[in-house]
Figure 1 (tube, rainbow, N blue to C red):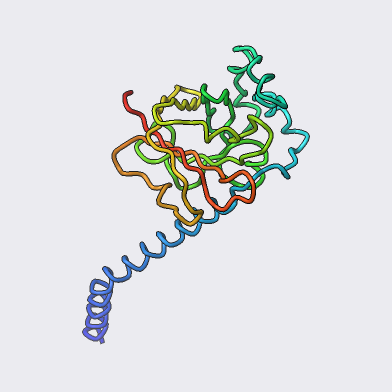
Figure 2: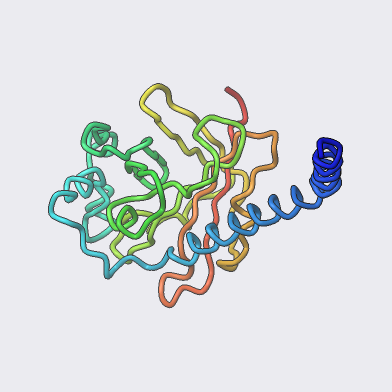
Length: 224
């Protein structure tokens, strides 16, 4: 009886050992497919945000952007103090940083998770991408409203060499724009990191009306 049990255990162990590589491959394939699907859903959810209505308790976010003015002249007249007015981390429990782009007068809180609710309020990080200042690709998504200066409305003005800053509450990370491109929503490779650089990727819809593609701005930390 004991010999039979031992023989069965040895047989079972042998099957597990032989099957492990295949089972591991299937598991990792499943995880990769799941990640791709989640990223595709995130990119599909990015659209023109003109129909979004901000909840009353989240209205202070609008004050962060002096570019809320109706035209470019009003925006140009905004004071430097207003441009640099930073949101309070305590006001948003799921806030993970502040995105700042001087060229387009953008100062916005970054919320965690590119959900419809978060993106109605401001820009948000895409789950399962990198973190600010770390090796990897920190991806941030935002709506592109028609209102001048609203969210990522002016993102297409960004050019190679421009600066992007992220303040995580402890330090400010400075990124240099390295690339701007237009992709289809299913092209999730733009969210992948190269494994060696500290990257950032900003994502919004394109064109403004009836968007079919995504505008991508990529950057990386050149020097600490």
